[in-house]
Image 1: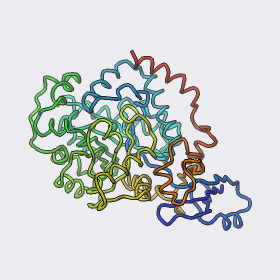
Image 2: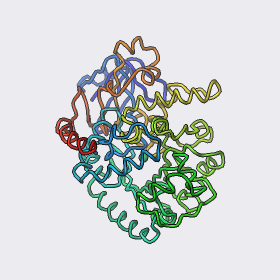
Image 3: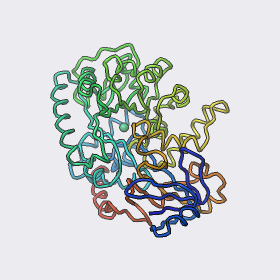
Image 4: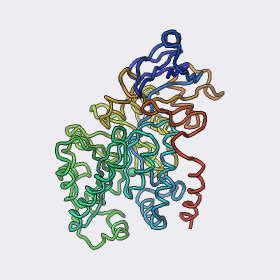
Length: 449
Ligand SMILES: [Zn+2]
């Protein structure tokens, strides 16, 4: 199959005008000029996207598919209060609701041109939607408990689930990992047990880390609403919690979690130079979630410090429960503008840099850059086409600028994973979007009550 467009952005090299990509057996076989490809491969099926950009699909480093139905439930509260409200609403949903909500997450992910996801699932409802979607990704089985006596049982349950989840996905596309939820919802011995379980293997581990100021205050001083109201609501109110005197990053490091080889730390807003040093030394990768961090009043992560230190950084959307949409263009745009606002002229980021972070950066963060993240011969064909022909976009001189400053998820023309088209001409080829819409209305009625 021959994909053609006005712009081809390999990301690993300069963009090509009037270019194309040849895809065979799920892999990228050639990247070059339109005329050369048409001359050399006259018999291949052609998909010509016109004034558009062909580029590697986005890599979303942080999602919770199962929370997609929560969009709009809590829009105007800071982190901890938002968390308490979401927690209270969770009880209203049954298993089918969580599954329907997950389907919405997978559909919107495809629609946004994301080809690889990193999803943390508590209920396990994401598995089937993720498997059916045809997307590539990492699914982390969430674990959490503040009850020391429950740690071994929780871990045993997780290990069982992980074995079963592996049988339900295509392991050439989806890897199963584990995610101790956060420093405020896990007893420290849980970090130790997870670390021992993973050992020196490449099993992916993710954690929400140093997100809110409340989390920081809870870990270091034992204070904030996370130390009181949240623990009461979660049923952990009677359990002793001693202030640790250290930051969230130092705390999980002391309990061994960062020693395993493949850790993804999500948010990392409240980190200082010493924390960044620990993250660097342990080769932890970062899921930068600019919109979620802003919307919940968590703050602004020190992206430039991560980059200067050479940390592997990509971008995450988080779920519509917090961030409202899974629009990766919005994520790049808000991330870029925020960085320019705080970085000024000395740490001024270009559109190209953010496109790179959204693709190759994410692949490196998940240690999948040998497979995806760029359009290079030999890599898997995870490719998207983004329309740049609309009035608010043309004349287009710099395709990177147009992508970051003018595009949105509605401009995605085609999403392909492993050489298979998942979305094109407004149609989803692996998911039933109409059926999903009806199911979601039922979920929303429950959440509105
Ligand atoms: Zn999250």
